[in-house]
Image (cartoon, rainbow over all chains, first blue to last red):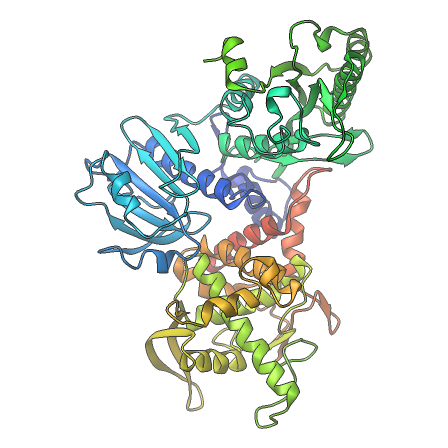
Length: 373
Length: 241
């Protein structure tokens, strides 16, 4: 399939002018990294990302060769062949993205990349009954994702069908644009779905049982960074690659965004995201007493973020976003973005990054009081 | 066959501690290969696919900083084939740890023959779970040797990368591999699979590492991503051949 970028279709002939045939082949394969499974993610995230890609690929193509069935079930199994052994009329299935084998009305028991496994018909199971039926199946704590065609939703139960819903994702009928506005929208959705309150946050953002007191875990940036990277990979699958961390002379950048450049035949930087945390408390050690973080310290963190994002963006000639997660208890009295240190950093470093102060709350009630539904 | 490999050097008939250890290592290798194939959803594996997978696991293990299980293989017109692994796979069938189906003999030149069958783990075996745990295919703390956990991770990632190829391309991936297909190595000669051995560079690893050339400064590809891209590249080579 030719690469696409911002709606422009590039042919193989466009790729890598001046390269020899072997280079051109290697370059062409390298650019397909944007379609690759996220091999550094957990198996749960990896599987979800691939199932989402299958669902969106089918939905955007208008559900080719599908009948009237309204849902599909995807089960991640450590051993798909064994797990599907009891299913009636099961058959091998592979590469559900590239093929048009119907997926609706079927249960798919697949590997961690959702690329191979077995599938069987879900005959006689209406949408309302399928969860009950799945509960009776011997899938135990295997991750289950149910695709609902009518509502265009993917509902995940990562710890097995008997566990609660762990993720609910909308199936997009049009591919996302590769624009700064789309990135901001993605960051907003990530904020509301993945980090707004402790119940949805990745572990290691808040100190266990201390979120209501606004005590962060030792390295909340790292926990959010990993989660955001997985989210962005899923958001722009096929268009963009997200990478974590970069130790370079001009500082460490949390998330780098790369896009394929079919004309040059290589991946190139598209943008960067620097993550910072402002907070009210820190812990000196596992059992230490929480120490107060001053407004000046928070401003220093933000100013450093401005410097890093700006220098990297200038060096790579891309745009930068400075996403500041606000884990402070009092978010109203002082705005760290307007501190003199930050203002000075903005004056000294160009281009200025897009700066966003994104609130995280220590409880669902606090989020609701702040106006989040 | 064994060369500098860790797979044991003694021959059948010399039943001694070294040989017994070699047998155990080879049986363990077969179990781990099939465990990875089962996890990737490509099992049961036909004989030629099992040997292609075994070969690629040797050829690409330096990407994962692991030494090849077999450092050399004889180049054969029928594709990579490891008689010792085949023998141990058949022993594991007899031991009830593997299941076999569609068994037949394929004729080979010079009145020879190769066994063709589909091999998979026999999940109903009472011993399989404990063996796989000891071999690093379960929680790391259950492994007898911590290094096996990493070897298992590598095999699963490789099997996952190969699982993205159409079924008929997986077997062809062995013969289309850059090192195996090197025209300067003629049939019945040895193919060396260490990163550098016998004055040769492992072309499979060198090719996989070349993908980094198409990424900008500061970016990096993980070992798993290199496997994925190389498998994709092999798929194209099989398709174009």
